[in-house]
Image (cartoon, rainbow, N blue to C red; front, side):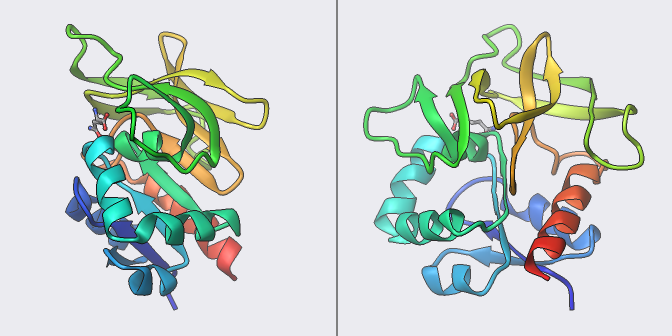
Length: 199
Ligand code: GLN
């Protein structure tokens, strides 16, 4: 039985994540309700706009449901806006913007600056299995900058000293968009660790 991985589908880059998860051997499911969330082993929080997602999480009643699952160890992968939603402290957010706080980072929205608003780069990545040390092509779109990482957070890749791929226990987060492009290692790593944790 493939591991069931939800993609939070309130807003943002849902389809490409679903495709990448399927290619990595998982069964992807769109999550828009607490009932759908109850059926998955793990959750992807995609890129998009974290302010909009925060509002929709609250109006749909999903915020508390996701927070409860995260509190009991549900694996999560957050990308870009999804990373912001998982972080403990948001800098430059809307005053009413909420986050789950399960990843001990301080993260500043839209912080790579105008010149580097959107860019691609080759990242040296650790912690993604047998290809460790090889580079990963990463697409950044109005990406957040991680300004602080707590002691329990592993930094798996950085750009100019700024962490862009981090992990804390079952929570993995990227400032970029691993669902764009054809390097599946981040999804494969997440699918594999989610399957191990749900076994
Ligand atoms: N700038 C967006 C935010 O603050 C994130 C951009 C993205 O997810 N590509 O939510």
